[in-house]
Image (cartoon, rainbow, N blue to C red; front, side):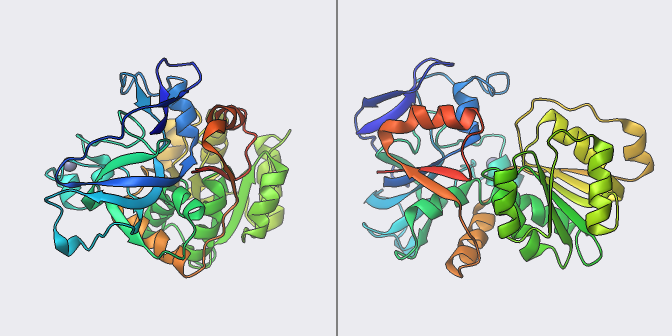
Length: 351
Ligand SMILES: [Zn+2]
């Protein structure tokens, strides 16, 4: 089968033919039909994660995976309801199933978690073995290329915004901002409107072309940070919303400068959720955070339930996608475009 693999970090991935993998008895072999490309694919190639998990090559990249059931393992229970030919979405974040995080469904933060696309098997390959309990069967009328990004780009901001909502940061007479309007941010704007309880939604980013799409997707206001100081942004925010600060923030960029700007604009008792990883570390002044009782939420990817919820929203036609599809042999070109920020929305590889 075709597979795109890292053989050496900081080099182009190698497009090659390798054997179709075997499956364990509790797994299903998925014939991949589409796989979204994520900034973390670029970061993996570039060695960003090596201080945290130095995965030994070869690594098959790609974790936003959808496909068709090809072969079912011998111990997959009949009650799971899978049949060959079913269309399935792969929930990443395969926990050990025994720790307390797994027991409450948060398998993506299991200390023994495994990820497709960060080891031997991944979605930029024609086949991937997946534990059956991490597959969700979907309606055959849904488009593969629209389903793929929902397993990361389309679920990660959803979980972050649910955290803000559940912690009481959203609602009427609040202002919520989405920082960064790349692959994740364009979904975040839509969830902010769906889950915000009437909060005004402001998209804040540099790129005006991407901001225009955020406006089309429901942002009440857009602010470009291009060439502006934090004071300029606060003034523009006040003009647009009547207040110079933000009650809730979902940061889909996570670059050092966006984190600094975002936390500087956070209101008294404001809440901030970071789901972006463009930067590597942050420098947060302590006194304002303590004296203003601000909350910083960590929010990582999404679990099976989160993914089921965004799939349900998609099936109801409530999610809009900005996508471009590309063939397998263009993987390195697309990685380069993503590295330089030159992809609008999500690029999805289709077989
Ligand atoms: Zn676990």
